Image (cartoon, rainbow, N blue to C red):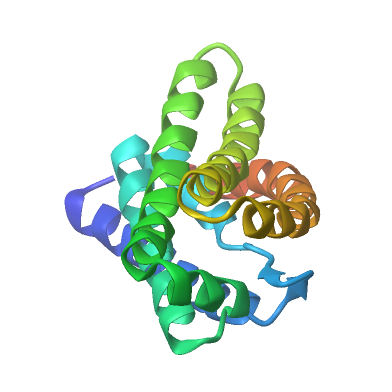
Length: 182
């Protein structure tokens, strides 16, 4: 794939991330939104590598931070009121890490078994995203607040994990077919 086409595809992934995150901000189980946005991050990281995963994850993190600041994410807004700099930082860092880690895992496994690579990458993204947020809560917030928020996050995590593991492999297969035709 030439550089211009690659840049265009990455830009499409980034735009998809923005749209999906804006929509998913209003899909809540508990007080945290379900993150549908990890799927294009995972697939982008699989197709283009961990650094593109890092970039796409950062786009996701920035959109999450905007949603938190505007109050569209009520739990994030609560965290923002307690520790603004930490909250904004963790929004961006957790997304960036989710993209980067999923790209690394896909690279590590895809040569031997591409299906296993994308499934593990699809599981790694929500794990990384959730664990990073969980560690932030434990380190920087009161224990009662951290326990309450963590309990609410567990439902979201399970839904995100299942969605990613089911949808990411199919989407990657479609993209590979498109690449072969292009």
